[in-house]
Amino acid sequence: MALRETPVLTVKNLTVRYGEGCPGCRDNMEKNRCAVCRTVWAANGLSLDVYPGEVLGIVGESGSGKTTLMRALYFDFMPTSGSAVLRDYKDGQINIWDASAAEQRKIRSNIMGMVYQNPVFGLRMDYSAASNIAEKIIAAGSRNAGQMTKRAVELLEAVEIMTSRMGEAPKNFSGGMQQRVQISKALANNPALLLLDEVTTGLDLSVQAKALDLIRKIKAKYGISILMVSHDLAVIRMLADRTIVMLDGKIVESGLTDQILEDPQNAYTQQLVHSLI
Image (tube, rainbow, N blue to C red; front, top):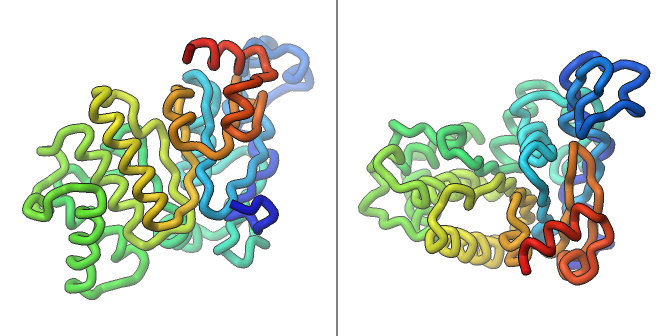
């Protein structure tokens, strides 16, 4: 990984605020809430880059703003302010949050893939596994049924789901299998960037290990860039090249994962690392 390469994603000063805010917000914060006007700053001036072929881990406690960042990037809602550019959209010259709704749908379909913590948000539970993948391909403009079936078989095999079950609905699958169908759907159109939001939370330890090993194999096979959120630094340690630590809507520390684990500078990061020992 050469950090001098053009980033796949660059985010600058992302802010997501719930409330009008007030002049005293910056000086009267209780965690991420203003004690004066009660405005919540779910994300507060976040800036980051994701480079080609790397896994960037984001770790932090619940409510730190990790999922807010991911869902803003995937257009689940619009941020209050800030910019994000993608290398593969308009040569990285246009803020994706300024794009039209139609353009944002294209970005979701072609350039990014998202795997949610809760598969209900990422899958149609009554559709078959193959139909979930086909839906993503159709959204990108393809109508060739034979190619969609071939792609569904390829991706389900890649996530180690038997093709004999491709006609079954995800509602009949275990939680681990549902996550694997989500991953296959997210990869349907060869996205440049895969967003993984707490994909192992709620899974049994043995299933977690299989999911993490699968993500490693996916990265190796497709050379994809991954932005991966977790509250568990052990998960980040296994996969991330670099790590960002978030607390109360802000980035409090960032660097190579090994550096953060071996020599954390921020008091909160030190607590996280100590919890691993």
